[in-house]
Length: 190
Ligand code: S6P
Ligand code: ZN
Image (cartoon, rainbow, N blue to C red; front, side, top):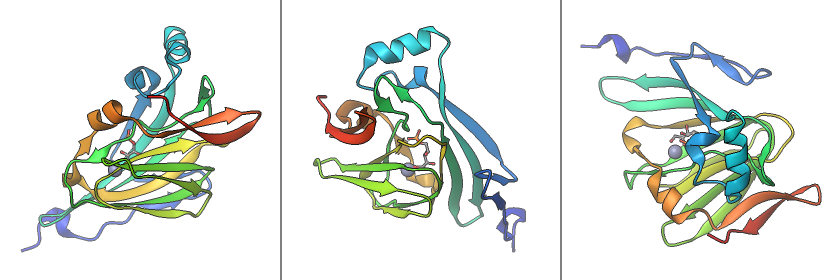
């Protein structure tokens, strides 16, 4: 017998605004929660000491049923830099080794950084309309290198799990920084 959450559910996007409704929950990620992530630790500390900064927000809609645990999020990364490194997500690896994810860029310009535990690295360049498949066991981080908010949809299973510590420990091989007015990928010294 169908349970109340087994019925179809739709949300409505406002593509110009980069949001949808109804939103079940919303979270914000501040720079103070990402002190291990940016290479210029002094620049990060100075911003936090002056009152911190929200780097991105995540708007969330679970599509859970009695037999499935799909979820959909919209991540909105605000424009800006910490030192010369562009605002980005904390980044994670799905804990389960059989869990892929789909990302779809709605607005802005950026990079999706991907890396395996063996050190294979990819940077997918994003503009409005890019859809990327993240295979299982690739760490993933998104970087906003544009002047506007970078907005993307993600679709994944809640049971995937999120391991942030592995990204903090290993880091990504490449950083996205501004050099002579241009966004460029440079090797990380971590
Ligand atoms: C979840 C998915 C996204 C991120 C979001 C924030 O699997 O990849 O919804 O959670 O973009 O990034 P992070 O690294 O702080 O979770
Ligand atoms: Zn993910």
